[in-house]
Length: 337
Ligand code: NAD
Ligand code: TYD
Image (cartoon, rainbow, N blue to C red; front, side):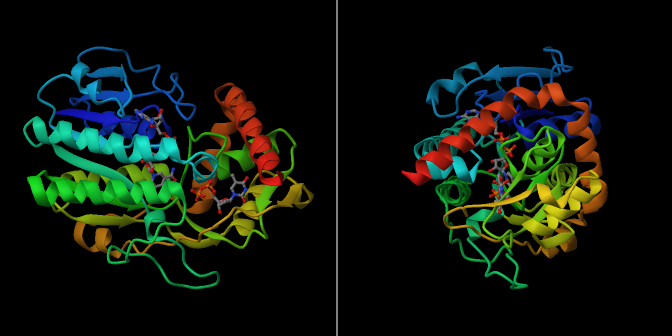
């Protein structure tokens, strides 16, 4: 099998390629990535270019990107995206280009090359926000109601994927997943920012009062869910994916990480809230009932593995952390203007 993975040098894409290689060593993997700030070109340095792995540096926004792709691809798994809500508030335009136009270009490529099986990676953020303190959850039938330019651009990409299925018979599936955490996540995102700040004895910025909640999923569990949908999912269907610790308040997560790292609660610093700050929680009973998938990792075991990875990979994150903190400083300055 020849599989095209987009965004394979980012957080989830890297983990997915490692997962897929382990599960299907005979597969040929083509990894196409623009290498934005979110990618690390060293993530898959142990994969050598050859008949089983090929890296192509390309931008999916440029429609000519397909010229360098090999023929006879069996499956596309589409991760490439601009993925950070805070950046989408700062500059939405790139989100529209990559997430909407880039997805459209890739769908066109799939359609014009023999209707290639297309799996689209999406987010629970397309459903909008749950009320604070509610025990409601998103499911496959929840209407779309995105809040940020990021989630709006992902919602648009989901609609395009479905339209290519209905209109052109492209064999598509979509997964809408909750927040992931684990190795290789950029230190701009919440959990790596927490861990790396604590490792550097810096304060931990908590937006608002820390009462917003997320549904955290260890990245390997996401990879196994994607694999289940690719192998056994119903063409045209959507599957929601979430974790075991639904509706975890940010402040409770912060306290858990501080305890696991043996640090002090005085390192918490409450800062200005994010505009349109959402809450997410996912009902994943469809994928459990239909495909037999469920998460394996507990929040404690997943966080321990993640903390250990950041402790032992300081070289991996040190430069990108400096860039991330510069980004946050600029963001804070702009919001004061
Ligand atoms: P990431 O930001 O870590 O990685 C994105 C990757 O896409 C990077 O390697 C980047 O270089 C590449 N990319 C960006 N623009 C590109 C372009 N124009 N052309 C080619 N490559 C480009 O993101 P992630 O956290 O790994 O997320 C991957 C996917 O999963 C995204 O589609 C995201 O919406 C979705 N998702 C993420 C989460 C999460 O918690 N991280 C949860 C649910 C869904
Ligand atoms: P983030 O990792 O940006 O993911 P998303 O917004 O896509 O879910 O943020 C996760 C949560 O953590 C979100 O509620 C915002 C909050 N947060 C902070 O409180 N402090 C921070 O420094 C960051 C980056 C996020």
